[in-house]
Image 1 (cartoon, rainbow, N blue to C red):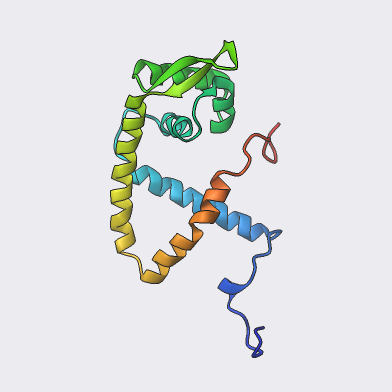
Image 2 (cartoon, rainbow, N blue to C red):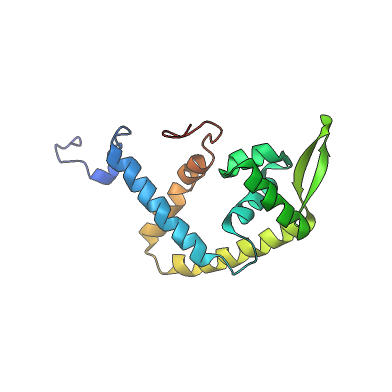
Length: 165
Protein backbone atom coordinates (compact mmCIF):
# COMPACT_ATOMS: atom_id res chain seq x y z
CA UNK A 1 0.00 0.00 0.00
CA UNK A 2 1.17 3.51 -0.71
CA UNK A 3 0.82 6.51 1.58
CA UNK A 4 -2.78 7.04 0.44
CA UNK A 5 -3.72 3.46 1.30
CA UNK A 6 -3.92 2.26 -2.30
CA UNK A 7 -2.16 -0.90 -3.44
CA UNK A 8 1.29 -0.29 -4.87
CA UNK A 9 1.59 -1.38 -8.51
CA UNK A 10 3.50 -4.63 -8.86
CA UNK A 11 6.06 -2.97 -11.14
CA UNK A 12 7.02 -0.60 -8.30
CA UNK A 13 7.28 -3.23 -5.58
CA UNK A 14 10.69 -4.58 -4.69
CA UNK A 15 11.13 -8.07 -6.10
CA UNK A 16 11.40 -10.99 -3.73
CA UNK A 17 14.91 -12.15 -4.59
CA UNK A 18 14.18 -15.57 -3.09
CA UNK A 19 11.16 -16.00 -5.37
CA UNK A 20 11.84 -18.83 -7.84
CA UNK A 21 9.41 -17.15 -10.27
CA UNK A 22 11.80 -14.19 -10.61
CA UNK A 23 14.72 -16.44 -11.50
CA UNK A 24 12.53 -18.46 -13.88
CA UNK A 25 11.24 -15.28 -15.53
CA UNK A 26 14.75 -13.88 -15.99
CA UNK A 27 15.98 -17.22 -17.35
CA UNK A 28 13.06 -17.40 -19.81
CA UNK A 29 13.67 -13.80 -20.88
CA UNK A 30 17.35 -14.55 -21.46
CA UNK A 31 16.42 -17.56 -23.57
CA UNK A 32 14.20 -15.35 -25.76
CA UNK A 33 16.95 -12.73 -25.97
CA UNK A 34 19.46 -15.36 -27.13
CA UNK A 35 17.07 -16.27 -29.93
CA UNK A 36 16.72 -12.58 -30.80
CA UNK A 37 20.50 -12.16 -30.70
CA UNK A 38 20.94 -15.05 -33.15
CA UNK A 39 18.33 -13.57 -35.45
CA UNK A 40 19.98 -10.12 -35.30
CA UNK A 41 23.49 -11.41 -35.96
CA UNK A 42 24.69 -11.25 -39.54
CA UNK A 43 25.58 -14.53 -41.22
CA UNK A 44 29.18 -15.39 -40.52
CA UNK A 45 31.70 -18.18 -40.54
CA UNK A 46 31.92 -17.82 -36.75
CA UNK A 47 29.96 -19.89 -34.26
CA UNK A 48 28.34 -18.00 -31.40
CA UNK A 49 31.01 -19.38 -29.04
CA UNK A 50 33.79 -18.18 -31.35
CA UNK A 51 32.20 -14.74 -31.61
CA UNK A 52 31.74 -14.62 -27.83
CA UNK A 53 35.39 -15.56 -27.36
CA UNK A 54 36.44 -12.70 -29.63
CA UNK A 55 34.18 -10.37 -27.66
CA UNK A 56 35.74 -11.47 -24.38
CA UNK A 57 39.24 -10.87 -25.74
CA UNK A 58 38.18 -7.49 -27.10
CA UNK A 59 36.72 -6.37 -23.76
CA UNK A 60 39.20 -8.00 -21.39
CA UNK A 61 42.47 -8.14 -23.28
CA UNK A 62 44.74 -11.15 -23.68
CA UNK A 63 43.90 -14.25 -21.63
CA UNK A 64 45.25 -17.70 -21.05
CA UNK A 65 43.43 -20.44 -22.89
CA UNK A 66 42.26 -22.02 -19.62
CA UNK A 67 40.77 -18.70 -18.47
CA UNK A 68 39.01 -18.29 -21.81
CA UNK A 69 37.55 -21.78 -21.59
CA UNK A 70 36.24 -21.11 -18.08
CA UNK A 71 34.80 -17.73 -19.08
CA UNK A 72 33.00 -19.10 -22.13
CA UNK A 73 31.79 -22.25 -20.35
CA UNK A 74 33.52 -24.77 -22.60
CA UNK A 75 36.18 -27.41 -22.01
CA UNK A 76 39.83 -26.64 -22.52
CA UNK A 77 40.06 -29.00 -25.55
CA UNK A 78 37.06 -27.26 -27.12
CA UNK A 79 38.61 -23.84 -26.53
CA UNK A 80 41.88 -25.09 -28.01
CA UNK A 81 39.98 -25.95 -31.22
CA UNK A 82 38.13 -22.62 -31.23
CA UNK A 83 41.36 -20.65 -30.78
CA UNK A 84 43.07 -22.68 -33.51
CA UNK A 85 40.25 -21.85 -35.96
CA UNK A 86 40.29 -18.18 -34.95
CA UNK A 87 44.07 -18.10 -35.32
CA UNK A 88 43.89 -19.73 -38.77
CA UNK A 89 41.40 -17.02 -39.77
CA UNK A 90 43.77 -14.30 -38.52
CA UNK A 91 41.35 -13.13 -35.83
CA UNK A 92 43.51 -14.00 -32.79
CA UNK A 93 47.17 -14.64 -32.10
CA UNK A 94 49.08 -16.42 -29.39
CA UNK A 95 51.58 -14.24 -27.52
CA UNK A 96 53.90 -14.81 -24.55
CA UNK A 97 52.51 -13.85 -21.15
CA UNK A 98 54.46 -10.75 -20.03
CA UNK A 99 54.55 -12.06 -16.46
CA UNK A 100 55.73 -15.56 -17.40
CA UNK A 101 57.31 -16.15 -20.81
CA UNK A 102 56.63 -19.89 -20.55
CA UNK A 103 52.89 -19.22 -20.66
CA UNK A 104 50.98 -18.30 -23.81
CA UNK A 105 48.05 -15.91 -23.95
CA UNK A 106 45.49 -15.44 -26.69
CA UNK A 107 45.03 -11.90 -28.03
CA UNK A 108 42.55 -10.52 -30.56
CA UNK A 109 44.11 -9.09 -33.73
CA UNK A 110 43.16 -5.89 -35.55
CA UNK A 111 41.34 -8.06 -38.09
CA UNK A 112 39.38 -9.71 -35.25
CA UNK A 113 38.47 -6.30 -33.82
CA UNK A 114 37.32 -5.12 -37.25
CA UNK A 115 35.16 -8.21 -37.70
CA UNK A 116 33.56 -7.69 -34.28
CA UNK A 117 32.95 -4.01 -34.98
CA UNK A 118 31.19 -4.91 -38.22
CA UNK A 119 29.00 -7.52 -36.54
CA UNK A 120 28.13 -5.09 -33.74
CA UNK A 121 27.25 -2.33 -36.21
CA UNK A 122 24.87 -4.61 -38.12
CA UNK A 123 23.19 -5.74 -34.88
CA UNK A 124 22.90 -2.16 -33.61
CA UNK A 125 21.24 -1.09 -36.86
CA UNK A 126 18.80 -3.98 -36.65
CA UNK A 127 18.05 -3.30 -32.97
CA UNK A 128 17.41 0.38 -33.78
CA UNK A 129 14.72 -0.73 -36.21
CA UNK A 130 13.10 -2.90 -33.54
CA UNK A 131 13.33 -0.17 -30.90
CA UNK A 132 11.54 2.24 -33.23
CA UNK A 133 8.53 -0.11 -33.15
CA UNK A 134 8.30 0.01 -29.34
CA UNK A 135 6.42 2.54 -27.25
CA UNK A 136 8.41 5.33 -25.57
CA UNK A 137 7.64 3.66 -22.21
CA UNK A 138 9.11 0.34 -23.38
CA UNK A 139 12.15 2.13 -24.79
CA UNK A 140 12.65 3.92 -21.46
CA UNK A 141 12.26 0.64 -19.55
CA UNK A 142 14.94 -0.97 -21.71
CA UNK A 143 17.27 1.99 -21.18
CA UNK A 144 16.70 1.80 -17.42
CA UNK A 145 17.41 -1.96 -17.44
CA UNK A 146 20.81 -1.62 -19.16
CA UNK A 147 22.84 -1.29 -15.93
CA UNK A 148 21.15 -4.36 -14.43
CA UNK A 149 21.67 -6.34 -17.65
CA UNK A 150 25.35 -5.37 -17.62
CA UNK A 151 25.69 -6.37 -13.97
CA UNK A 152 24.08 -9.74 -14.65
CA UNK A 153 26.31 -10.34 -17.68
CA UNK A 154 29.40 -9.48 -15.65
CA UNK A 155 28.43 -11.54 -12.59
CA UNK A 156 31.10 -13.90 -11.34
CA UNK A 157 31.43 -16.85 -13.70
CA UNK A 158 34.54 -18.44 -12.23
CA UNK A 159 32.65 -20.45 -9.62
CA UNK A 160 30.64 -23.53 -10.60
CA UNK A 161 26.91 -23.02 -10.93
CA UNK A 162 24.41 -24.89 -8.80
CA UNK A 163 24.33 -28.47 -10.05
CA UNK A 164 27.76 -28.29 -11.69
CA UNK A 165 30.78 -30.05 -10.24
